[in-house]
Amino acid sequence: MSNAIPGLRSCRVMLIEDDPDDVYLFERALDRVKAGIGREVVLERAGDGLDAAYRISVEDLTGRLPDVLVLDLNMPRLDGVKFLHALRGTFALRGLPVVVLTTSSAKAVHDEALKAGADKVYVKPDSADALLEIAAEIIDRGVVYRQSRDRAPCGAFTRRRQRRCAQPVSSRSRPHGGARCG
Image (cartoon, rainbow, N blue to C red; front, side, top):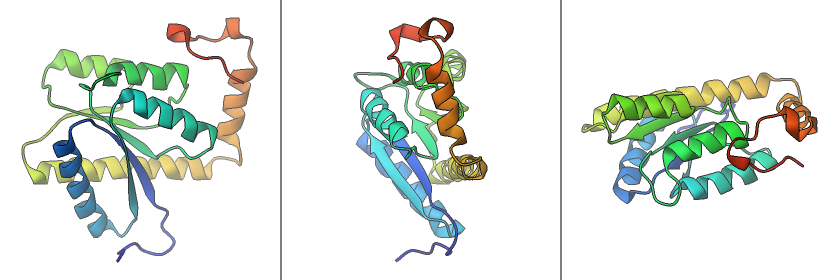
């Protein structure tokens, strides 16, 4: 049974994480947060950066992007930093909020993630209460992003994408040989 307040839009969170224990802990934290806020929170999961890149590309094309991404950095196949470069460069999704949860406390690792396009970097906490606070902030970021998307003029995000795709290939950057639009 849901405690969601009628009329409030859900918040879609995509967790990009390969460790089942971390997935479980994050799901529990999200469940506790959503029980207290009266808003439905939908959690989607990708097991690594490559799976996430595929899902994001499909969801971008179908207009069903999540409201916020939660990203681990150390993953097989495509790590978090490379995923961020693809998201911000190749997919040109600069506004989609990305929060990194990492085991690393090294400033250089955090700086690299921020430079690649993360909005915020957290060290995975040791306590459930600390993870609960992080989960609440993640939902807040997702809600703010969703509201800004919902207030945008009809098709504004699509029009911006179409303008970018209409540019000659030579006039737009395509880091790492990214795929062409259209």
